[in-house]
Every structure is written in structure tokens, then in C-alpha cells.
Length: 270
Image (cartoon, rainbow, N blue to C red; front, side):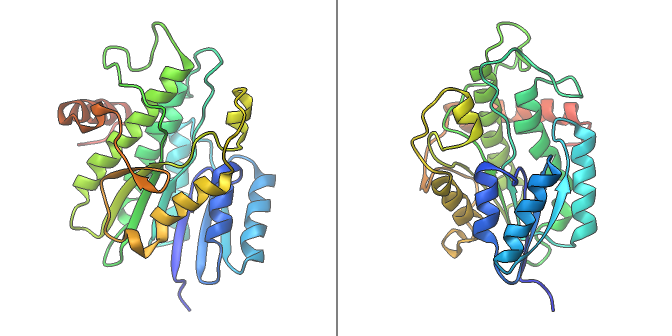
């Protein structure tokens, strides 16, 4: 008997991602649980199975573009169709020094932006194809305009600015992706799940949580599977409400510039 749906959730062994897979877990749903920690991955899979679903843990460190490619290959070996891709994995190391990925890119830009762009691009053959699919990318209300003269922030580094740039880049990517996929049955949306949820990055930043991860998980699940959002594409949501992003997200020239830079960094053809 074929499964009703298959969904990939990156960064789903902790925090919001973990609650997302727990809420999606149900008979007829196969969840691809991604993370870096085998123990937490096993625990997440077991939670899905207890709820009547099925799951497979896929380990990959998204700070490496080669590992992103490996993850895409693992997903392709697991399924021929994805009903949803939820790009949840990300970092928020706002108080530390500037760090770089294994490929030499500023770490927030690499993990929060380049990784989901590359992964989504590589998974494109598994999306649509006669069955609707959704791409949902988690971003943030904390957005900073991209400085194209110093995208990697080699001068005057600020962790908050690096995080905000990467999250705005995700929104710009979503808007372009929606245009690219128009008419294919694949939609692309993004969201700020909730303010200051009770997650490890929020607590590490010294912020007192004001929302539970359930609030953010509910908003994410709604965009991924709720029939009310069927066909909705090219939109940014603040929790459950469609909202307005930083003005640079609507600047087509800026989006073209970001896209060109991204294609160069990833070695992809436009």
C-alpha cells in the first residue's frame, strides 16, 4: 500500500523541527527526519512511530555543501516523490565571533541560506510531477538588508546582522522559487514561526522565551499540509498571518543580484 505523503523536515531532532515531525506523525505519513545527532534522531523517529507514522533518520551537517548534496542523494534513495520540504534547519550564533563554513562562507549565510537553496534545487525532481508539493522555509522577523559589497561580512562583523541577512535571503529565495515553479503544482512559502520561542538558541542568547515551540510548529505545519493553504505561493507569513518582509525582498534587481551570487557560490547554472 502506498503512503499518503512523504515529508522532509530538516533540523528536526530538536526545537521547532522536532515538534513539527511529532505533529505531522500519523498513519500514512512517512517522515524524513534530518539532523546531526544520531541519538536525538533515533528518539525523533521513535516518537513518529509511536504516533502511527513511519520515519527514517538522515544525518548530515549542513555547514558543508558536500554534505547537503549527500543529504539530497539520501532523500532520493528513500522516495520518488516529496509532498513537502520543510527547510527548518538553521543557526543563530549571534554573540560569537565570525565563523565560516567548511566551504569558507560566513556560517549563517552558509547554513541558513545556501544549504536550503542547494537542497531544494537538488530535490526539484522529486517535487510535483502530477502531485502537488509544498516548499516551506523557516525564516525570521529579524531581517537585515543584504550588503552586496560585503555579503560575507568580512568587515565590521555582527552576528545579529549576519543572521538577519541570511533570513532575508531565505525570503528572497522563496519569492523567486515561487515564480520559477508557477504552474508546476509546487508552491513555495516562508514564515517567521513565532517570537522568542523556548529553544536552545533563544536561551543561549540570554532571551527569556515568550512563546512555546508548539506555536511555531503549528504555524509551520499549517503551511506544509493545511488544505486552506493549497495553491498559496510566494508569500511570507509572520506566524499564521501573511505579512510584509523587509523592502529588499520585493526589489527584483536585488533578488537577481542575490541569485547570481548564489549560483556562483553553489556552482549551479541559472
